[in-house]
Structure formats: structure tokens, C-alpha cells
Picture 1 (cartoon, rainbow, N blue to C red):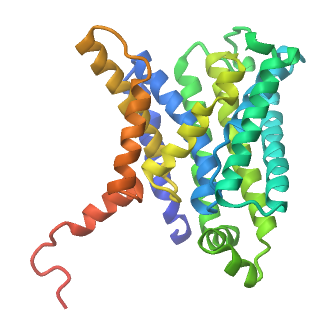
Picture 2: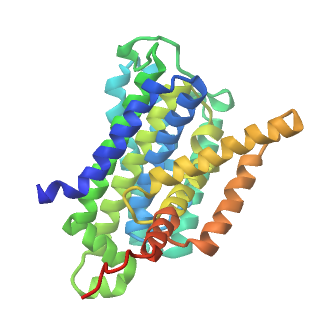
Length: 331
């Protein structure tokens, strides 16, 4: 029972999110929550590599886009069932992560150099997808609408939400397990001091390759769900910088290197963005394109300045400052 204790908060959080659509049936809320879960998956992938391993990437769009395009093209070009296409797309995303990691880490790229290389790969993929006829070029790829379970398309929108929530739950458990494992300890050692970790006998290349492969696979899974939700892709959507930005902002805002940080960060970031759009719409009687990006930027500045450990770190700090009842803690 003691070993299951770290997983109880995950069970509680997932159960609370699972019953939410039962009481709140608004399509707007459901679309928001489903999209937030997709972003959570991408953010958790980034968090494993950067939050635990200290390898900051600016190009997780490369993995997200590979998963999204593979999911779409396997269905459209080859007629593969969506449920069969999903694991193949995830494996392709993981393979891209391994290849980029192998090239970058073998060249001993670190810090800003590694971040820029990942960004460059994402941009190369975006340009190729935009120019290649097989991927639909600039017109993109449209997945035919077939509201069938076999096509992973559901008449009840809550089904896709619960499917995404199931994947998020699995990834949360996986992250908690990694954090408690020997591999997780080596990953953290790598983040704290790579040279010292290597001197202690840690195979840093192997650990980093394992981290980026796992991270890329999870991010590709987010891309697969994005395809099934919107049924349309182009190079800007799949490999655009928007997903790289949101994947890294969510853990930073929620709590870098924590299990729940990406989930909390995605809900806070996207929630504030949507709330701001609605508020601006009421005040100005119209939309203001890009206002959510302004919110993201302002929130990032505030978090970095006043809550460097994110929302989780801030909540923990406030709880520690709470006045204790008289007599509590007395010897």
C-alpha cells in the first residue's frame, strides 16, 4: 500500500476530471478540456526531457508533427485503421526523437546549442511537409469524417475527452514511476551536473537518448489525438512553433520537474487565454487576435519573477507559511 501512495493523487485528479463532463455538458468547456489534455501530453513529454533531465528543447513540434502527420497519412493514404495507426505514429515520433538526440548528444551539444538544434529540425520538418505533395503540401491533409468507434471518431464528444484523459492518466503514472526509478535518479543527476554524473559512472549518452525517445513518443501521442480531434493538418499546425511554446510553458508555469506541473500549467495557461478572449470580446464587442499570446507572455514573466517553481512551488510555499495552531510543532 505504501508503494501505491504516490499514485493516489493521480487517481483522485483523474477521477475528478473524468466526472466533469457528466455534470458540465457545455461543448465549449468540453472542447477546452480536451485540447488542454492534448497540450498536457505534449507538455509532459517536454517535462520528462527538460524538467527531469535538464535538456531544454525548443523543437518538440518535430515530434508532435510527426505523430500528427503519421496518424493522418496512415489513414488517408494507406487506409490503416486509426487504432492501428496510433501506435505506429507514436513509434515514428519516438524514432525521430532518438535520431535527433543521437545526432545532437553524440556531438555533445548542450544548453542553448541543443535547444537551437531541436528548433532547426522542427523548422526543416515544417518546410518539408509544406513542400511535399505526399503530405498534402500547403493544402494540408483532411481526414474524412466517419463517426465510428473503429475510426476513433465519436458522436459523443465526451468519448474523445475520456480517451485523452486515459492517456494523460497513463502518462502521469509513467512519469511518477520514472521519477521513482533508477533511470529517473540518473536523469536528475544529469540535470544537476552532467560532468559529475559521468564521473560517477552514469552513461549520460544512454540516459539522454532514453529520455528524448520517451519524451518524443509521448509528444507524438499528443499529435495523434490532435489529428483525431480536428481531422485536419497542415505544416503550420503540425510543426508550428505554437506547440513547442505551449509544451514548454505549461511545465514552467505549473511546476518544472513535477508530475502534475504540465497538467496544472496547461489548464491555467489555456484557461487564462480563453477567459481573456471572452472578456475582451465582451468589452470590445469583438475578438482581439493574439491576446492569448500576450497573456502567455505576461504570465511567463510573472512566474519567472515571483514563482520560479511554478504554481505547485508557489502553493507549497504558501502552505508552509500558513500560521500553525497554538501548540502544534511544540516539543
